[in-house]
Image 1 (tube, rainbow, N blue to C red):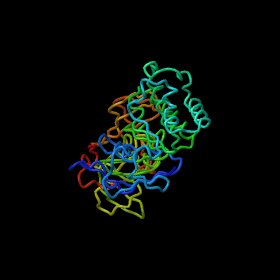
Image 2 (cartoon, one colour):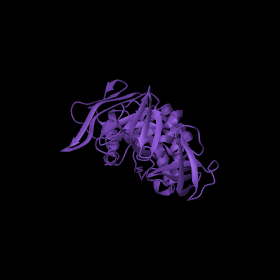
Image 3 (cartoon, rainbow, N blue to C red):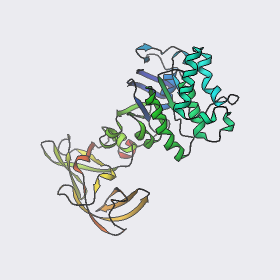
Image 4 (cartoon, one colour):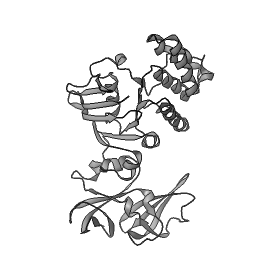
Length: 362
């Protein structure tokens, strides 16, 4: 099932929740919408569902059919809320069977669908238990997911479905959810505020900010090669160093950042104010000939599988991360030679509003 969102706007008085949003989701894609709190991601999902009515002028197309003016029950969409909203007076089986019974599915088809969902979701041990008898919130949410899938819809909307779970359950369940969706060949749109969750499960990530879509791409594209500086800031940790283009040759530029000079591809003119960006893992502890520096370790952090170093070069500090098994034996106060991978350096135009405002989450 395909989805197309065209020019969707939603206002509440003077507050603009969504502003001219356009989005296409291909059949079978698992798309994750991520952004800071209040950016409009849950509002967009509820507009697609029909729970919230968009302002005039926009359209919601499902497989080419305009469903903009249809009530939720006629849009044939499955929906999983962030709060686990199971019917407390029904068992797990009865919760999952609710939609097929209400929609008067063929009896044979209904029983086959329900049994398949119990198999896919691995929730058979809780078949006859009421929600209050299921102590695991992860299992409760899996039952809620199976209930949404039991509608027979091929488009599933998930609004922060894992946010109320503890971290270990959340990490395990997010992979299970994607696996089930892919096995059933369903299209899914999943809203979350968790960047790591988004990158681990998405085929495509949609970055939102202040009611608008900032950028769309694969997790790898948006993490290493974002086109927007807000995407670079929001989707994981990064180094941002203001500077100026002091030399250009073909598509290669030299950017002077205080006492440092970075060599990288750039489309900006000589003299342009820019920001050099690279991820912590692009800092490599050896000399290479390009973007070589000597710094001092001013902080060391143990992050489980990774070690993070804060390195100072002149007046500039960098963050570096290495897998613990590959990390050099460095301590605070040590001098270190390192280079920054030229292919992983991006150069952005310096924001007119300043870096602080460009990174503002509100």
